[in-house]
Amino acid sequence: MTDVLVVLGTFGLMVFVGAVSDLVFRRTMFPDTIPLISLGVLLGPVVGLLPAGSFESVGPLVGSLALIVILLDQGMETKFRTLGRSAPRALLLAVTTFVFSTVLIGLAATYLLRIP
Image (cartoon, rainbow, N blue to C red; front, side):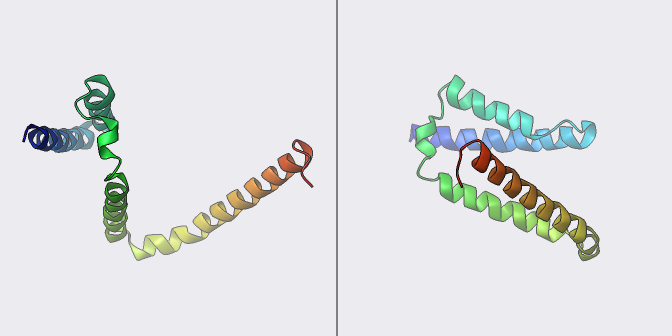
């Protein structure tokens, strides 16, 4: 029973800190992720309240759910007009980055690693 209370209490504390840090961010533009990361480090490795191994089984599920929530939230806020205006520049950036990385890795493989 104690483990459940510790997990629920920790979750509640993290939600509270997240809400407060969001309010602080809206007023001061101080990044709201810094208090959450600090709280996670404090509760995990420093205090040892939440051992890292206890989340290995639910990590992929939580990561997938977080990705779904983030993408859904951003998708709902995206305006089609803004998307249409920024798409050509985003495509140019993506293609340029891909070509530059491919050429650079190819040259490094050929001349530094002697791979034909």
